[in-house]
Amino acid sequence: NRKETEQTDTASFVVVANRLPVDRVVHDDGSVDWRTSPGGLVTALEPVMRAHDGAWVGWHGAPDETLEPFTDGGLHLVPVELSATEVQEYYEGFSNGTLWPLYHDVVAFPEYHREWWDAYVAVNRRFAERAAAVADQDATVWVQDYQLQLVPQMLRELRPDLRIGFFLHIPFPPTELFLQLPWRRQLVAGLLGADLIGFQLPGGAQNFLRLVRGLLRIETKGDAVRLPDGRVARAQAYPISIDARAFESLAAEPEVETRAKQIREDLGNPRTMFLGVDRLDYTKGIKQRIRAFGELVAEGALDPEEVVFVQVATPSRERVEEYKLLRDEIDRLVGQLNGDLGRIGVPAITYLHTSYPRDEMVALYSAADIMVVTPLRDGMNLVAKEFVACRRDGEGALVLSEFAGAAKELKQAFLVNPYDINGLKSAMTEAASASPADLRRRMKAMRKQVFEHDIDHWANRFMKDLTEE
Ligand code: ADP
Ligand code: G6P
Image 1 (tube, rainbow, N blue to C red):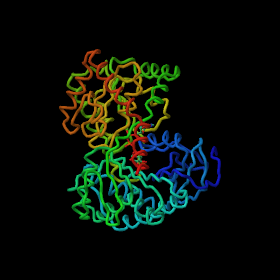
Image 2 (image 1 turned 60 degrees about the vertical axis):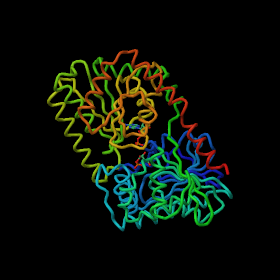
Image 3 (image 1 turned 45 degrees about the horizontal axis):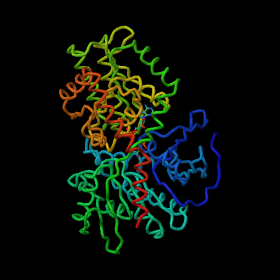
Image 4 (image 1 turned 180 degrees about the vertical axis):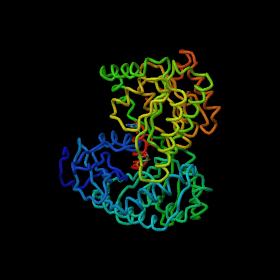
């Protein structure tokens, strides 16, 4: 056990997120491991927490276990316990069976269950109480993401002295969709407990402000909401990013460069390597991109002797029904395509259902020619930015969905509508046949954007707006 247990006293800066940056994994034989937690929230926030000495309040990923606060690699972590029933009803249920599909354009059907809502309220209260106990007098508390939208209001009631920020990592939906929620007023009021509410895109902030006016009948002026008690809350866009320099310097490590070459060799030194990297989630458009690639090969537009597709998908939310269905569908699709198009020892698609350490991800980004990022809806998509940050060589192409937040910044990508399979095919062939000069020009512009708007830039902008009068 590499964790050092200690009683964390109070902190002047506190982050509250459903997940801690590390996940406690209990194996069948009872042994315990800690793993980096999946997803973009942890990738983005970890460097922020290293820069600001604060406490991170969150769930450690295992049900029915109560742990003491501990430090891990210099981070002060405060675990919040969830019972097995709460994992089902609050995490898998309301967070990922109701809010996640609703906020992502209902690409899957959101379910509304009153027990799930009750669990969401109870768990949000626990997070608020834990944060209230950890925060110094007049501290700054930054609440994260859709799992904890009631925490700002609950925390303000417990601790009116605090400065409270909130950031939503996923899209905030159009009002027409949000209004389906039986608990729509409570959620908007929950968020209004914060002094500053951050969204990935200006559209999200506007959707939220429209609900404040329409649903709660509270006036807004620009980005400001004047609440009945005289307090002002603001709603604004802060597009999140990555520690671009850290990715770039990892890509420059000799071992990573060697590993990138090895990956291409193991794939039979193809002329073109396509790459997809995602959590295995139905919002990511994995089926659409595999189908597009399969058709291109079947029609002879891409030569299977010369091209390969590598798809890496981290297991995610595996007990939620829609994710089980997705996993089966992708298994079937990949099996079918490789059966039809592969040759002995050379599958057309190499599909890896696993998560890798950061250096292996960076080697994959460096080895690829064309990164294919095709979500049907995505708050930001950090994978697209990671790929760009790793391309020190200035080469490589990015095919990017218009429906990822990142498309607003990475305008020189080959932008696609992932629902349009023919358009997706054209973008993939266009990227595969673009001139090196064109690709370099595009990559240069995208790298400038990512390096000038990195995670420090994001955190500093948010913190400045939150802490200034
Ligand atoms: P989301 O937050 O929805 O998962 P993002 O693209 O914003 O989507 O962030 C995903 C994060 O997870 C990135 O930092 C990416 O590097 C990481 N990641 C994705 N797939 C894997 C994998 N197979 N192994 C390790 N890390 C992964
Ligand atoms: C997205 C969400 C995060 C979440 C992550 C991983 O990035 O915005 O809040 O932590 O996915 O999902 P998980 O359900 O495993 O925490």
